[in-house]
Amino acid sequence: MKKNYIYILVGLSLVTLLSACLKKIEKFNSNTISVDFAKPGPNFLISDATVNPKDSIQFSYTVNSPTAMSYVTITKNDAEIVRDSVKTGDMKTFSAVKKLVADSAAGVYTYKVVARNSAGVYLGSSMPIVVTVTPDFNYYTNLRLYVPDSTAKKNVTYFNLSSHTGFSYSDVVSKGSSNQIDIGYYYDTDSIVVSNKKQAKGHTIYNMQVSPVPNNLAIYDISTFTKNLTLMKIGTSPTWANITSAGILRATGKSLLKGTLPNSIGSLTAGNVIFFKTAAGKYGALLVTYFSQATAGPGTYMNFEVKIEK
Image: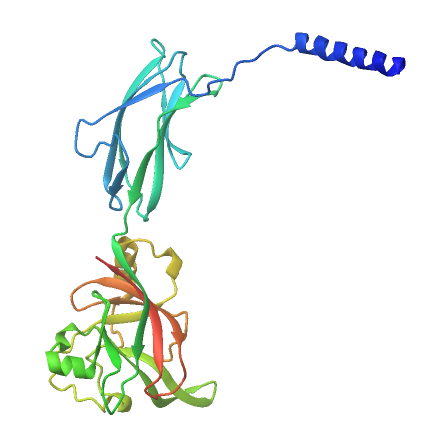
């Protein structure tokens, strides 16, 4: 018992000794600077903002630091995009005006002003300014068209790409809205030869100037319809995921939609991307996502998505 008591006393003595040797270290305040933003014009940001792709965004700011600064940067999503050296003299104050351009791709971007000393040590940053870039194109998903039906003529088989609105033959006839049709969809049972074998042309989209009228469309009398010319062509670049702005849609469309183009595109498969220009002059792209079956029966449909400039 006496031996255990001695061990306890020795342990307590060591704890007391070690505690006396420890030096209290104050928590380091890593952000020592202050940043003031000014708004001398309409495009200068002093707080979070929502803008269009490639809009002008400007910053006017003054940085004050208790210690000398060597350089001041602007970061976007923590990546440096602008750097200024702080000149000799009063290196504790720095002012600048920067004119930038918002990203071309829709998304959320965080901008900060950051200061460092000559050793590259972080002195602090401004509060973040969050810039939300809204898309300059419309993106419609979960769209569907059916092949024509010969009896009730109620299948939604026509489509307006700008308004993402579908029409049946009955709708168009009763409302006189054929001028709204950009494309139609049907299953072409006519044969083509692929790898020395005959097969149906299959799933097909077309504009209203298709001629001669295919057998599977002859069940509808469109002789009095307005026949809009929508230019169309399958493309492989950019990929669907990389179509992130109206600028990409326009540039791709202008490059691809040249020369003599077909008024219909058949043998479609899921994954096809079709670039188009409507009669109203809107560029866009259509992604085929699914076909329900490979027949001309009235239950056959196509699922797709559309990206089109506003």
